[in-house]
Length: 104
Image (cartoon, rainbow, N blue to C red; front, side, top):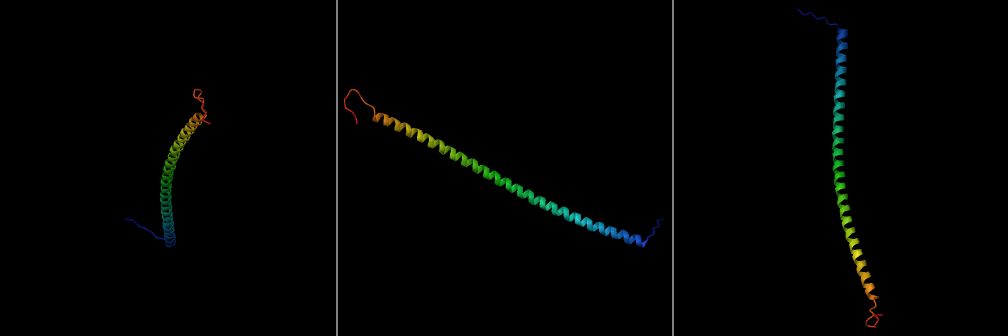
């Protein structure tokens, strides 16, 4: 047979501790939930930022390739144009000894 003795002063103290513990547990649970929501929001923001960074990096690399190709093309055109001009200027001042006529 099991006999229990209840002391009302201690019982009230015990119920008060249980209530306080429950309130503390609710606060703890709410705090953990809030932290979890904030962490998820932060992870989502970081993923969004990484995606933007990757997109911007791809755009930068494409722009760099575009500028590089056109710069090389312009350099080649300038070198070709300079060569043609030098050729024609030399030809302009070339003196043929056999004809006796000068071009100037």
